[in-house]
Length: 269
Image: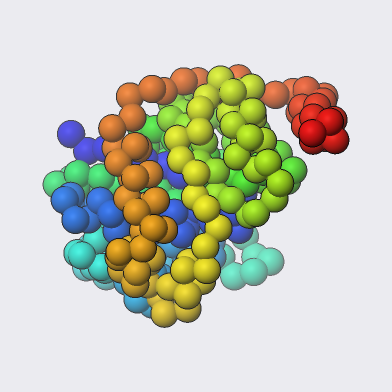
């Protein structure tokens, strides 16, 4: 049975880095498909070694593409797809996700024998396009990436609202550290408040930008590093996870009170 995972989070929080590295980890044992659902279309760059054509750009040139024109083979034979988006300032960014999912279904891509499918999704749950992996049940389980920063957790809370509305299964919170004080405690407190858990902590590392400059994952560029081991461990935890919940996100006043409590706690230390 195919394991179908959706990774959500605020733009710029590091979803694509995490998705690419856990995909690289899984590829050592499993047949993996990665679908980038972000208009920036950069999820698979470090897996393929460069940017690949997006579904929307392909369809502008050819209304009936073959699967080989849409799915590109990257590192360790990982299948890579990028939904793409419209030109800046024109159209709905989430439309690319809807179009991509429809095309992949039509081409029979989901009927192939993938062990794991990972979706990298922008955390703008207001847009119907970005909710497609959950609403249309392309993904079975969700993980939210956040740091301990206010806006990142604000976005995570909004994503939790979308997950609850769609009655999807939240598998946990991934703390992608930005180096702020008490970050893991902050994210752990948030996860507990919404009825979830922290499933992984990714430390800040210079190996990440060093790898990405060369369009490679940490696992490919620095396979024996501690950072690579962190991604391997996260991939294993997600694969073996059986603890899912429907989150109970905080109301706006509760969220603000949550941060006031954190600030007071920090000043008392």
